[in-house]
Image 1 (cartoon, one colour):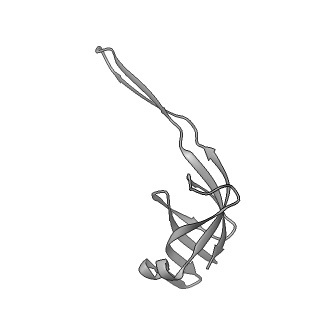
Image 2 (spheres, rainbow, N blue to C red):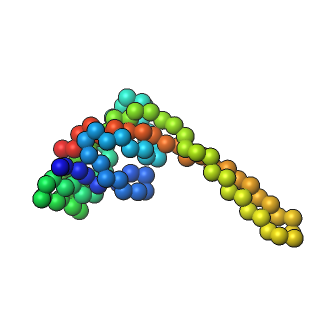
Image 3 (cartoon, helix red, strand yellow):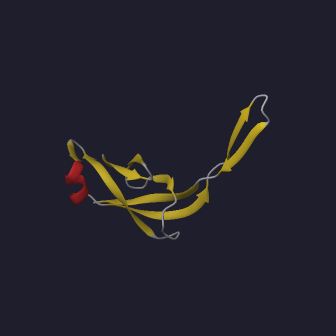
Length: 102
């Protein structure tokens, strides 16, 4: 089984051909192609890491669509002082399908 560990959005993801993964928003239109940075490639018993993975391995993915994550509510409160602070956040996400590991 061939799979790769790629760097995507400050995290590392284990991917193989045909996998759907959700990443932070990538600068490409839906239906477009994006190249992911490989950290490691595992091909059966052969493992390629480090600078070899960056120069020899190419992981491409097709952008399926863009979406937004769940709303996160951040609320701070200090007792007896009247301090209340409320803030919301939604992540911008992209869903991609891995098309090739070469």
